[in-house]
Image (cartoon, protein in one colour):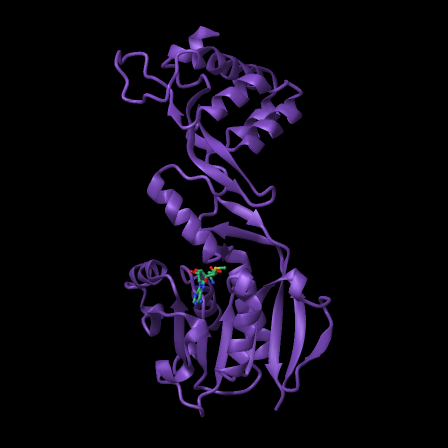
Length: 336
Ligand SMILES: C[S@@+](CC[C@H](N)C(=O)[O-])C[C@H]1O[C@@H](n2cnc3c(N)ncnc32)[C@H](O)[C@@H]1O
């Protein structure tokens, strides 16, 4: 068991750090320390839940007393055996035994339960746990902004729905607004879908996060088919079409994947402030009616819901941080 405490063998799993920050668990309303674990794939943050799932799936009991004791002492970093004097005073020698027990638990699961281990040793931090303090702040801000981006397939699906089912008028001067554009993949999918007929359209990608907007500008700066798109840092909910030089005679279409906690506000603002002819949004399923049916939506709009091919979203636009959110495409069309 002592082998793991001093090993430099990177195939042996062991705990490196605990309580990097106390992690707020929304569902239980409690805080738990996070654990940084050295795995074959790198060093990743894991939550208490990850350990419990590992124990349940492998049927190897989690050494609860050792786990609790180490958690109570957090934050601490595992002492480097090569360094005599450590700067971390929170490390107490009696914790060594508990740490060895926990290392042994990891080693046992890894040796004997490949399936449970493969989930635990995945190559990313657990959702909401990040590998540096600045990442952690980014993570929190991203969550507050609802930065769960569309998969490419869903972005293409949205663009197809707009072009095949909703743009039936032969209008050459549409103004297309993506009010929460993130890294711009819905606009990218739309440009690909539309190809030449895009000439004459005004296309705006807005996002309240100026870094997301810079990302779009940078990413598309050399792509000539994206050169007419304006990327603007703005809060959609306090914007009006006049802010962007759109006058009342220009027909607006609003398309996107709004932050889910503000989804209804985005719909209302698109209809009321932008007087959009068409609004196509990915929406949380709880706010939607039944897919495949049409509904009246207020006095001026008709509404249809369409199933998405998958409900996968990527936190901060990173496909590795994939999560599922029950959702549908909501299409609103203004009655003539
Ligand atoms: C669910 S993500 C969607 C990103 C992109 N549409 C996609 O699916 O790839 C929501 C985006 O809305 C942005 N956002 C949040 N509140 C906003 C607001 N009030 N105005 C504009 N953008 C906002 C976030 O920064 C985030 O990038």
